[in-house]
Length: 84
Image (cartoon, rainbow, N blue to C red):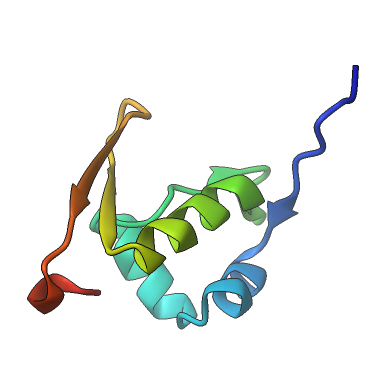
């Protein structure tokens, strides 16, 4: 049985991977349109790479994922005029 490795990414890495400015990432998190980060400590905030990959894939097919407080996700297809 192969153990799955999870990768953690800090904000600058998320920005580099998505091509989105750090301030915009935080705006999308606040709007629940971007995965919520995990706090490892008071000064260390990270995202799971799988969550970022899923968000990127959704953007490429024109889907918006809303990240609910209870950890569930709601996916909707965007119209051309609603793209982020």
